[in-house]
Length: 146
Image (cartoon, rainbow, N blue to C red; front, top):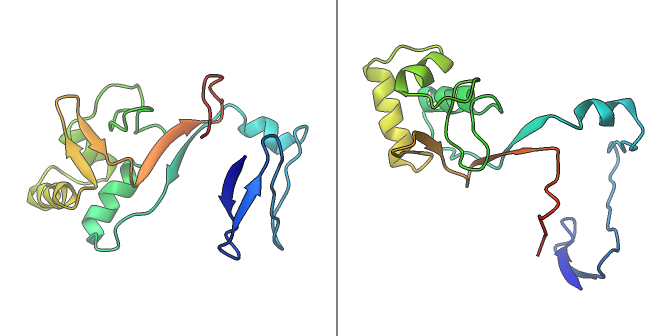
């Protein structure tokens, strides 16, 4: 048995294993397994953006949003990469944002590091998984939800 929270009321609900719990509100769309849209999206990767700090400057926001694409974030470790999978350096990140590697860009990168949005490691620049994660529509058979 699992406990879930009803997002509308905030109350806990007990759910038996195998039981489905779906809450639909007005305007929600249901995609059936055989629908064309479901098939078209089935093999794509996705990036889930949880939230961003509201205290980001415009330049910091521009840098973060330009790198938050499935092509520029590597799965499993959130390292910023080129579309070919090679690790991106600061010059590449500046190019993603349409900026040069100048003092404004360097100040924004320092601000993002100080605010905990990114970190620089030996492997490359990493986006904090608290803010965004990368995944794919393909489910790992070994994955289980607690």
